[in-house]
Length: 449
Image (tube, rainbow, N blue to C red; front, side, top):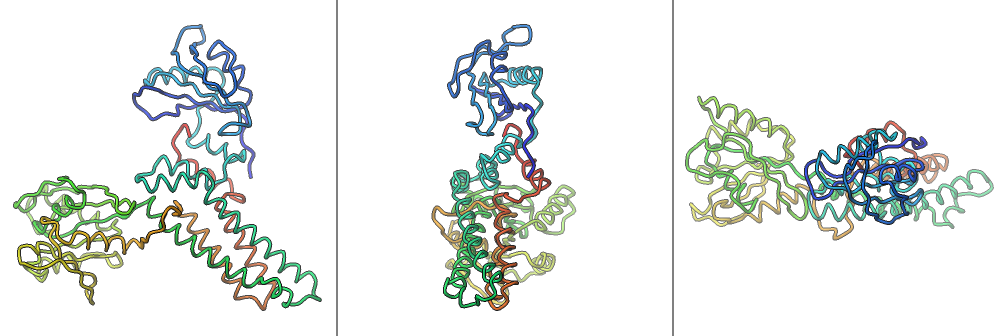
């Protein structure tokens, strides 16, 4: 793994815009003297000190607090200074410019956290959880990110890795001493231990899939002819009047997006223009965008008016154009107008729900169906806020461990599968992660982190 750079970096660490407080952060070697140049006083380690920040001519830029964290007891493992001043964009830029004059360079996105990783202050899973915590869109996602940041996920990964190393030692010792046979592994319960690791990997992968849902959510698109109740359903799911609802066909001209939480999962719901033949140029543009949204959907909620049963030519034309392979729920809306009870039916045509968006009848059926499609089930507080690369690594590790178990009568092959399984797990925490992958990961962080 590459050594961390030893130059001095600086960046504004608070969000763009105006605020009561703004923070400029610096990290690098030997910042004691630089703190004195900025504030005109000697800093004291890990103590917030009132300071007047000066420019090169001794003029006052701002006044606020200075904090100095000497290496290695800092976030990055290097000397770190934080200048906390008034949170105006101009004064923050002036403070940052002064730091650059004194020899710092502007930090790249994620560079502070990357240095923390390279200096051993965080492993890669913990470093990624910093960005996940900042970007969390639900309470459940934020809690999961905090658990990963404090090392919960990493400890599980390291525990599995250590046990795989022990098993590799047993198998390779048997190979190195041919007088020993498979009975040695049986006495050490090696095969049972491999099976236990495989079961634990399946459980972790299941929790990681749930965490991936917490991160990314589900893209749900409401589709149907005009006046079938798409906007009413969006309002009902959102719990407030987000879309205009009228009896005039074509009221919705453009895609309207709303994000709601369902068991902590972000559902990105898009209400679209009604699909029909029209001469209205504006409505045509809205319909074109509807089909674009459908192509990107994870789930299509196909609304029809229960009074026509979804059997008219216009509905058939819509169904024919819907993409194959996208999850679909057919909702027969307005059951309150025909005195039908809410219901869920499953048949050759797929899932059919009978409800009333306007009256709020049967909405729980739709919520439950969306959770089912998402593969959600309750895990309590142990969901792992996983990224796609974590899922890939866990799947790879599970496949290798299962292959090792199947190769119990070919010990050379078993040893190789266990080695590859260990390497896949190590990818999660970054112990053997190539530099180019690190560049991709940290480039997605915000500047100042």
